[in-house]
Amino acid sequence: MAIVQGHDFPDRLLYDVDNQIWYEPLADGNVRVGFTQWATTLMGDVLVFTPKRIGKDFEVNKSFAVVEGGKWVGAARAAFEGVVVAHNEALIRKPGLLNKDAYGEAWMLIVRPSQPDWRTALTSGESIGPVLEAWFASEAYKQRAE
Image (cartoon, rainbow, N blue to C red; front, side):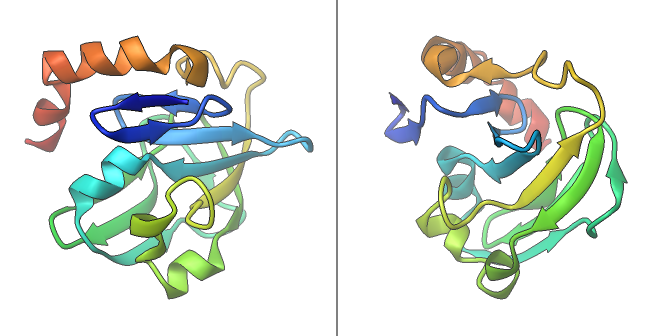
């Protein structure tokens, strides 16, 4: 597991660094999705989680969920095209789970990618450390917030 700036990034996951979203391939070909621990820290206390409806398509860099926190309101943007298969009912009822268990109980969605090459733009957990360090050093995350 990589630990960057005091935040965990499990090796088993794939990451969209720019959007701070993790993806976990499932045995059935679907993918579990969530925000990184670093992102949830920046959000502050998460107050509302609103996912895209089950059965709805989503596009690259478009929202498939909205999160409202004490310090941030914004969209969870997809790294690839697909369709929403399920959303986390527990997270809808208790959005604060995001602040407690970003890589476990607080998963956001299960999606089905529409293309077999959906992993192309993602970073593996084994190589996330140096990629994140470079991203933080470039301060690219500050530009996204403007």
